[in-house]
Image 1 (spheres, rainbow, N blue to C red):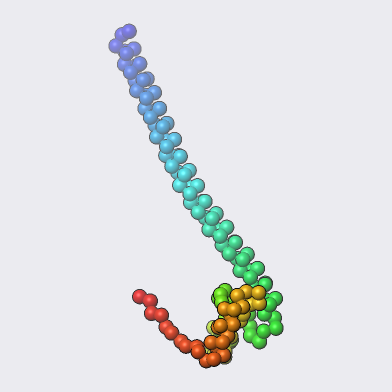
Image 2: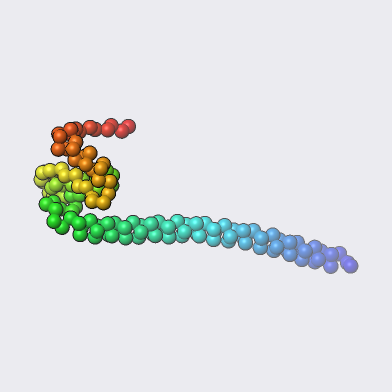
Length: 140
């Protein structure tokens, strides 16, 4: 083997090693980019799925509540869900107040039959007995 052949073999071996190293580095870079894109897209898909689920739940609740509140003397948009011990509180006139100048004309607690009727009865007794007060919680 003469000197020129040895140099050529050395260059070829170096080129082969450089190629293999670059191939490993490029694969790692591509894998990292794919992982980052997958994480980003997964987060977006989760957010979209949660938003769609929330919208669906809100629609079902509105449909159900709307069927219950047709005969009530206030607008459904004035009602707010509490859950326990009374189902809802209606701030009568609140929806119109937000849309234009107006006033809240009443506050109504709404018990849902079949729920904790004992707890709702206690709240009703407080309201009817005038044992209601206003408190402000200062945060910060």
